[in-house]
Length: 441
Image (tube, rainbow, N blue to C red; front, side, top):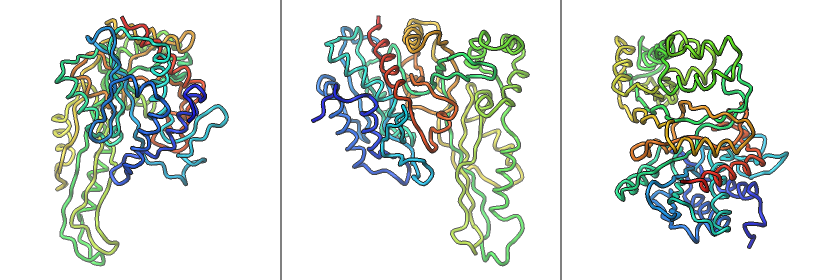
């Protein structure tokens, strides 16, 4: 058997990528998840032998590393399920786990097996040194994050029932970047202190159906199409929430003087600055407003049959301060007169904003500063959803940050072809978690 020390972090990640832990509504092979857990146990034997472990129904993993105190534990999170990866769209086999040109290539390299390996490397090495943390450390590795499953929620239920109140929770989210904002060239660590709420809204238009050779005007598909166009043409009004204002103030010292002046006055000119962000690009626009995107369409079951029901799913990301109730009222106004119904509203409001004025934030910042000289820590709003949203129920210090440098192309490869992570940043990511664990007060 290959020993832990005989392999590199990159080689271990490559092995884990080869487990096809795809999590999708119509694609999930439980045998691959079982294989991942077996491979993970083989690659990190001390972690599995010395930590208390629980496999949650559905495959999520919970480990407890007893520290000198059980009060206010540290929670380190990642997930090992991944989104589908159609091989024909990739330059390489997405599940081959190839190491080439200084990168580990494959689905999950960034989202989220790479960050998981950074955690496991740190824990395994500290266990080899017989280190005992000052506080309990929990490792939470989800198996259904990509489908908004119940694994993390079930873990939080267990911890809450046991009276566990985490001092700090760290999950995926932001990353180390050098293009955080137009005009910024400094290396910044983007740490999400909150994430947008994720809500799916189902729209349905009903019609009489019949043969496609004798269509009636304004049928179900036509009315649904009009609804989609209205949604596209009427985006939510941009607004700068408190976390966005904190981000802009943190960036003000890193941009040229004219832009800095705008950012420093964002509180007094909320609407104009929000409108500016909405026009700068898709990432800044998403931070400044609630977004709505049509992701699924369904109509007739055959090419020559008129649809009796046409359906669309609208994936909504609620900005901080927005709610499902307001969303429904907004959609009802947009759909007025179209004879299109709201069939369902599934999802959650944004979780509460985490603190940036306490010892947990300062500890996270200190650990991040070990990643690279002169790195700046910037709080921001995460536009995507993470499992950590559930932990906001039991902790006021939930942060979303992957200790990996990601270029624009790498960020665009998440949930897209040709995902890869730099080998040297796996080592730095491990060092980040070591620094965080060993500095616990």
